[in-house]
Image (cartoon, rainbow, N blue to C red; front, side, top):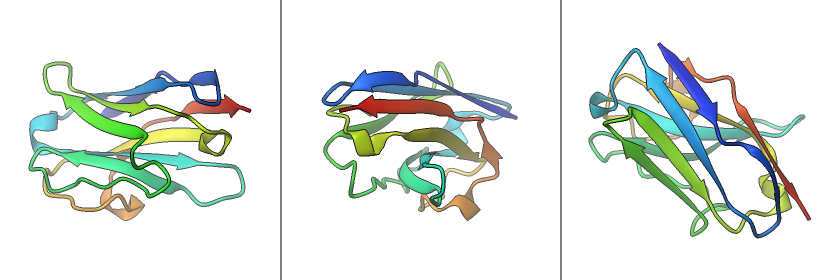
Length: 124
C-alpha cells in the first residue's frame, strides 16, 4: 500500500493549489481517504475526508467554503482543491487511507496508511 501526495508549493495569499493523493494497493471504491495538515510544534489536524459510501464528509471549520475534496476512481486519486489560501494554511499536508468505505471521521486513529506529506507555504 502506498499513498503519494503531490501538488504542494509556495503560493501568495489568495491563491490556489490542488493537492493530489495517488493511492496504490487498494481501490477507492471501498475506502476512505482523509487530508491532514501539521505545523511544527502543533498537533496534526484533520482537514477533510471522503469515502466510497459517502459517510465521511468532514471539513475543518477553518477551510469550509475554501477547500474541496474529490476523488477520481479511474485514477485512484483523491484531490484537495484549495482556494483563497491564507498564511495560516501553511503546513505539511498528508493524505491517509482506510481500507473501508464506512469511516465517518477525520481523526488520525481511523486511518492505517499515510503518505509522506507535501509542503504548502502561503506567503502574505
